[in-house]
Length: 59
Image (cartoon, rainbow, N blue to C red; front, side, top):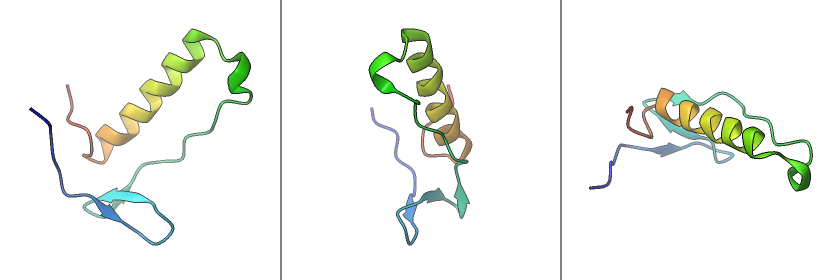
């Protein structure tokens, strides 16, 4: 079953929940040479940011 939450889009496309905004997440320097560990770390950063603002349910 999917998890839904109120999501608000602010000017400029920032995704927020209850007025909060996830912190910035930097891109990989060169995605063509990113290791599996770097990709997994980046995915975890993204998931943590989405959980912090209530967009993704905490596990």
